[in-house]
Amino acid sequence: MEGECRAPQARSSGLPAGGGGGESPGGDAPLPGSSGSSALLQAEVLDLDEDEDDLEVFSKDASLMDMNSFSPVMPTSPLSMINQVKFEDEPDLKDLFITVDEPESHVTTIETFITYRIITKTSRGEFDSSEFEVRRRYQDFLWLKERLEEAHPTLIIPPLPEKFIVKGMVERFNDDFIETRRKALHKFLNRIADHPTLTFNEDFKVFLTAQAWELSSHKKQGPGLLSRMGQTVRAVALSMRGVKSRPEEFMEMNNFIEIFSQKINLIDKISQRIYKEEREYFDEMKEYGPIHILWSASEEDLADTLKGVASCIDRCCKATEKRMSGLSEALLPVVHEYVLYSEMLMGVMKRRDQIQAELDSKVEALTSKKADTDLLTEEIGKLEDKVECANNALKADWERWKQNMQNDIKSAFTDMAEENIHSYEQCLATWESFLTSQTDLHLEEASEDKS
Image 1 (cartoon, one colour):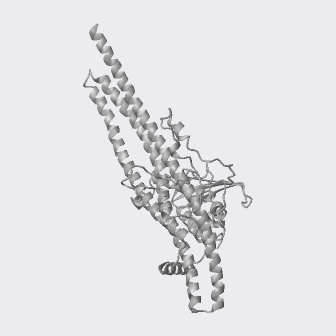
Image 2 (spheres, rainbow, N blue to C red):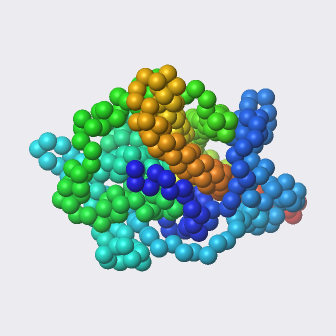
Image 3 (cartoon, rainbow, N blue to C red):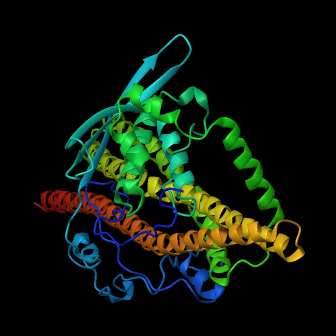
């Protein structure tokens, strides 16, 4: 298959830290090998045990500054603390820039759907022009993902957002949902563009450059329905058969994925619940201020104090709204993307096992001499090469993915921490100012009474 034996090579334009798409890519720092005990792998996974107070997110081997190096003294500005965590800068050699924007609704007699404008700018020689503009719908993105999986079965393909949100199909054309999906599709394409192997996939190039009719024609050139069904049936049969002896490093990798999936799904659920509760608190607080204003109209002696409280509540509402916006736009999408990544990784492991299971079945047939020996020997040789290519591709992509996962999640959590500190500092300063004004007022009144 295309690109199957091509292991990912290091590029300076790796996945951007914090999931920022392709506009500010960060470099890929090398990681130590994945070999080691299962205990070490578990230590690298998001650790959220009920009997522990701390959240250990990252491997001690990650090429990031040790969080213990933070000064125990709170800096004057939260920014000065956050700036102590920096990633190694690498030269920006990015040559492919992709933007997904301008969602547009289309209504036909059969269906209603949304298309998104995709603008591509590049300096690569294999492209006919330096800039392209096309429109694509969700099913086109789905086709691209499937084609990438076919061409590169053991590379980690970036996940697509779910087809429908949890509330159901009724909410598909809600503005918030469309914008959330646009951002996710933008990130999906830029993840591919930053990948050292996927970025050169021919289907990806066609997706970015072909007009609608050209893309439809290209889709028809893929494997037919019967061929795909045959491949699926064979894959299911091999997966049911299982692998006799999965190499130790892939056993450890599989253990990591299982633990990571449990932890990231739990964090996703908790984060969603926290956001929901924060939203309910915010809605209640918005009603709290106006009540004090109404009250001040009937309490002349307390009017200034009540209006001061209402003003403080209003400022705290604004700070809380900004903090919630940061939570919904920065943390929640990153966490949920890695929930989808965990599902994708399980699929990658299954495809790797299917390739090995096919080799195992041929070796078994040769041992029992159930078929032509010469033909089997030739097939086994090809399958051994295929397994080696698949394993090498997965091992190289695994380290790259794990480093970027750590960078993305660490960036999201530190951004959230900074936003929380800034919000609470604003609220604290607001109430302290109110208390100071009330104290001064009390002293003035006391002074007037004495005179």
